[in-house]
Length: 136
Image (cartoon, rainbow, N blue to C red; front, side, top):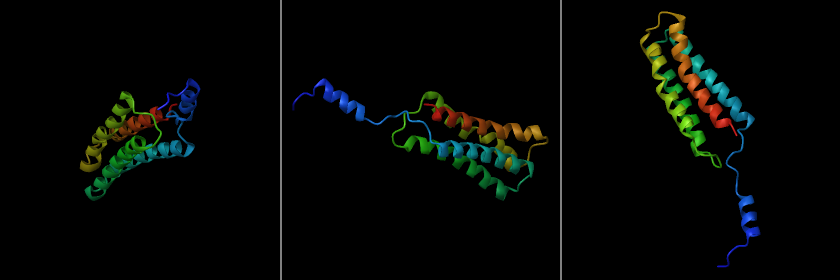
């Protein structure tokens, strides 16, 4: 094997794919719509006092949105690795779904604030995760 010259090594390095390409517009729009849908579904299910038969699918759909975005970013080719902050926000978004799940499944809220605040926590954690993934 012949050792490569510095020019050959530089040419090889320049051909390597970049891991810091920005998110597409479609990905950003999809993320914002996902966050709004997550918040809206959790809020509406708790506000309308949805029966348990509807509350369980709402909570599972919320979990599917959070896990789906995490899977999308982990399995996507040519993306940079997750930072500890991004990993923490992705996990926190899933765990924080437990706050509104109590309101959705067991009809516990008495006030609008008791419904909105728990529904906002997982949505904000997911938004923080997505925005941190979108940075260049």
